Image 1: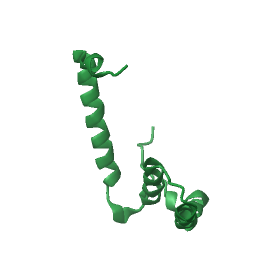
Image 2: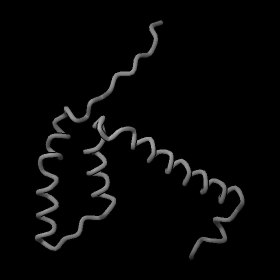
Image 3: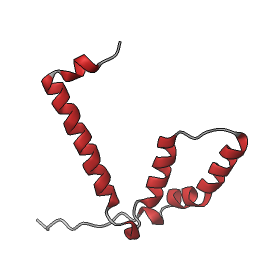
Image 4: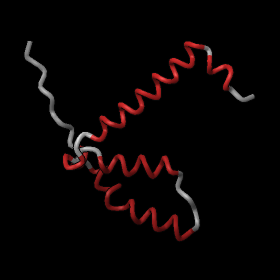
Amino acid sequence: MAPFVYERRKPEQTTLYAVVRDNVETLYAALAESGTRLPAFVRGELEGYLDCGLLCRGFAHLAGWSRLAAKVEDFAHLVWAGGWRRRRRI
């Protein structure tokens, strides 16, 4: 069996990446002009997608995963201790 060799996916070379990269500022401008607000998480996802695959950005995506893992761990501790029931609003 051959050893596993990691091969980078290179999202920056895809058609989708090019379309998003070339049009995201136009989208932002059109929304601002119409007075429509783009939800922050959507803007974050678009900008995060454009950052993915760029080696000059380093390993920032790993930092994001570690923050997410910490939040999941905190939530798991709350659930395990039953604290989530006390904090829940009905």
